[in-house]
Image (tube, rainbow, N blue to C red; front, top):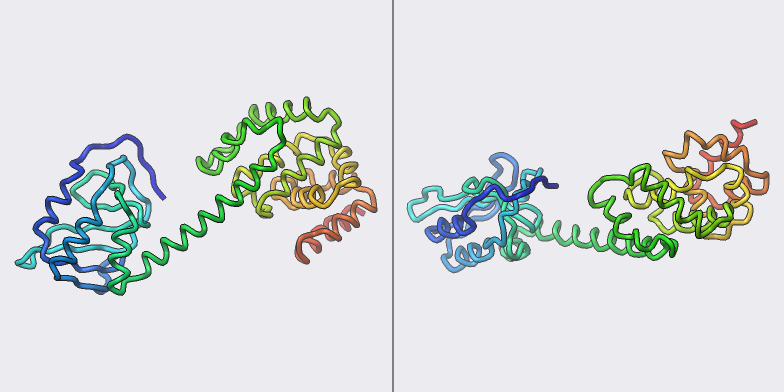
Length: 290
């Protein structure tokens, strides 16, 4: 959504001074010269929008999108004063600043629009809030299943989904060494990793990135020990083991893992597959071992 760093400068109250002379505002969608959605000339309403656009900071970032809507302010002579774009109930863009500005209260301008019939930006903002709440809840549930010896790494693990940076090979090895010290029996360790992996959202694509960390540790385990663990796995562990087998990054060792499974373990994996498509995919891979 955004990039940036240190503030590139700019007067935080410059836009407010310009808008003090605003007589009206036209609202249109982005990008391009879209039709006007709303025109407001009531001085009290225009002043309320001006107040809603007060900023908290110029943090030195630029949103990567066009923006939700455009606010074209004009004076009493209908001359253009300022063109402002709203971004996600978070920031605004105006060519008087070298970067986007962080709003003091990003919801206020969206509510101003909504009560005048332009409801989509507020609706999208609330939907994004709900999606983020669900993401945060899933992350908390996942973090609660981190093995006790690794709890001090929880912040580092979750940061991989914020920064987009995976754990380095050295960090994965360090985590695996701690687990090996706490769970010296390989089968017990694999069962614990599988149960942790099962606590994620269920996606096999590696997103969000922090959910891939148990699988990175499983990559360091022996395939025969993995097969023994599947034989003993309870509901949570078998869910995680199947998720691992379905993972994209596991495919380079999938044949060895499936070959090591006992006939009973293979039946167990197929029986507990999360859906018909996954089950058929695993069936084809197992049949291809013959």
